[in-house]
Length: 350
Image (cartoon, rainbow, N blue to C red; front, top):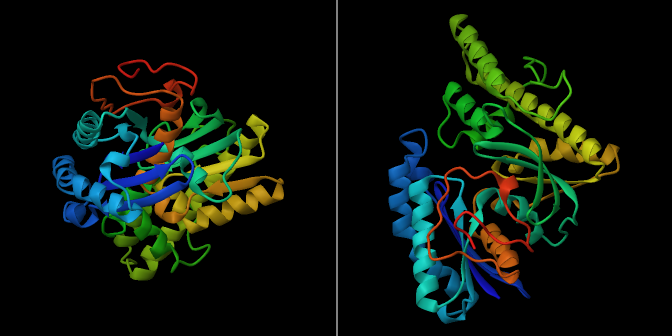
């Protein structure tokens, strides 16, 4: 099957073509970072309108890169959730319109399942089962994965996710949008040991996360340094490093516990925060000590992209799953409710 993948869950328009035998043929991505930068975050209405403007041209661009025609497409996968409902509707509308015109099956894909399966696009993909750390936007989750659609939630954030904490810390440090990469870049200039931030919920058993308290601790530190007239570029860098180190250590501790709890030696890291170099190095060090392996996608496939949706869609379309006539857009969608490949789709998906 030749699958067209469409990703429009938030502020990036992603399109890709994935062939079930030849693999990824082409992909294209347009980021709305500049569009939302003046607002310090994503404006949903602007995001939806920009998806409308960019999506069809990107589809044509990807077809051109792959040397294919629209008539060659044998299935279409689009992000059906979770995400911004208006943005989801743009991708779903185009997917269903093309599917109707080309008379090919269409399937709504779970955004986080796409992230989880993104490392499968690499030359050395992980084998099932594995433990997955999903750190993308508003999600920080640990999941035991027995196969596609066979997900057991081990733990998740009870308040702010890691990505949200990065974004909010960026604002405290007077950094531009998007915050996460800016904090990581600033942390490279920080000095070790100047500040010591807490590692939340690591002093008790369990696999849940909480980054709200760490965010508050960061805010209190920033406020105190400003009050003491100790606010400088170096101070900002030192705080950025202390914050990033706290997040990384917390994620590593929880991942080690999850591998032990699942009796597994394979860890998949996926989502935007998985591109963080300090986190990758720390997880690889932890895994190396216990004889485990860490898998992740190349940096361009850590953030939202069409390739991950095309791959996930290909696996489910090959299994015979497809949408009904209704466009599916689910702003909230627990991943552990997804069916396996051999099961029927429900809740509007058949």
